[in-house]
Amino acid sequence: MTNPARVERSSADLSPDADLLPSVAARHACRTGMAWSTAGVAKGFVQGNLAILPEKLAASFHRFCQLNPKPCPIIGISDVGDPRIPALGIDLDIRTDVPRYCVWRDGEVVEEPTDIMAHWRDDLVAFVLGCSFSFEEALLAEDLPIRHIERDVRVPMYRTNIACNPSGPFAGPMVVSMRPFKPADAIRAVQVTSRFPAVHGAPVHLGHPHSIGIADIAKPDYGDAVPVADDEIPVFWACGVTPQAVIAAAKLSFAITHAPGLMLVTDLKNKQLAVL
Amino acid sequence: MTNPARVERSSADLSPDADLLPSVAARHACRTGMAWSTAGVAKGFVQGNLAILPEKLAASFHRFCQLNPKPCPIIGISDVGDPRIPALGIDLDIRTDVPRYCVWRDGEVVEEPTDIMAHWRDDLVAFVLGCSFSFEEALLAEDLPIRHIERDVRVPMYRTNIACNPSGPFAGPMVVSMRPFKPADAIRAVQVTSRFPAVHGAPVHLGHPHSIGIADIAKPDYGDAVPVADDEIPVFWACGVTPQAVIAAAKLSFAITHAPGLMLVTDLKNKQLAVL
Image (cartoon, rainbow over all chains, first blue to last red; front, side, top):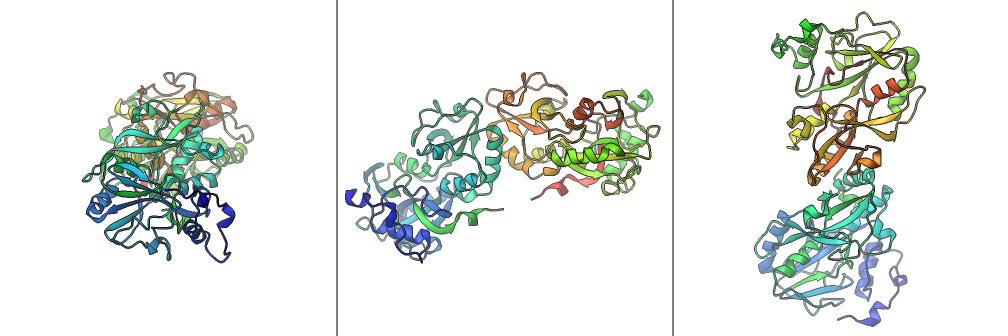
């Protein structure tokens, strides 16, 4: 469970060595106690959602991601039983380098440790999926205002009536995140995020929340509500919380994910993910 | 004025010579009497809006187009007094190759001839601007349904409260065309049309007609109304009718345009206009 002493550390601990990449420094900080949100950490570097599953479920989950690339864009996979993912960071250790984990048993979170050394097994496979922090950086670079960042709250997220394509035990609704924009900015946001399919890409919906099963935009299923003005359009992107909702719905006997908002920081640069 | 005998000709007259490009055949047909809409004529070839102005106004109008590239994307300009535009078609004669023209005097259409041989002057400059037919072809190729084409009516067009950037006597509101889409199709339509900046490019607005000064979506200022369903989003593109509205507002002593929907067919291919 949480070690309160670790949570107390300040962000001043993040970069003890000026020679390290900011992403490497962030992972080292996680190893030595950083257990808070990675929003704004190691700017410019790709952060990832995490799903760790036993090998016997990994093929089904891999196919689930393949079938649902907008909510589940894979940016890295470990070998079976190997906690390293060199493509995302030479020294990366998936057991220690995320600030906080959720350990799932029978579809419930039973523990939220800051490392998973005690849970690691030779049959586990780690999947790292793209995250909206990357496209939000691109939106901000275009001077498109992001409401939940302005308000310093979590992005609002909603379960929808859009069914994911099922694979084995993995099935369920797509979860989406929402950002309100003026119409011309919504059009620009479609263009900007279309360049980044590895981090959810273009929106999946805009304008009619009821059409995708969202009864009340003021009541997100995850994260925090933000206001949508009368002259704005709510724009919805596929969300990396989808696999967590699917893992919960499948009542898997065992799985590990990151704690929402406390992501894996990789050595990839966001700008490397642009397809054009 | 209109020669009724010419209007009676059928589209069977369009391709008398199988060796001609369809676009060349269409222009030849215009020379010999075709005086109907060019919608669907010479599929795959770029059609253009036309504005012909005296040289003393041409520099101001050219700058107006430069300042307002979404409604006024230039695809060709003649030399002063020269009725040819070889870049758009080797044999092209701007005086005869449009099905029907509007001759403007003091901001009013005073004549709608099928050629302008009697109006041509050594000081005239012809501007050809991209037209939505090109991006509609791209939308249809993506299986995105276009309501006014399904209903075989003209696209609905509206004067907005979006001010064009003025240049000399040229000033006034942007005119937009509207196509309703389901939200996911609206997002795809933004992506598809973004590839074609030479033919109006990405939409300028979606979702809130009142925000851009459209009081009643059911009452277009030009063209025909089409229904927008409750689960659809009205999507608005800058429209090539804008320069005609501006020419009318400026009450120019003399100008010539094409008649709406009766365009110049060029030898450019629509697919050549894609920027990626």
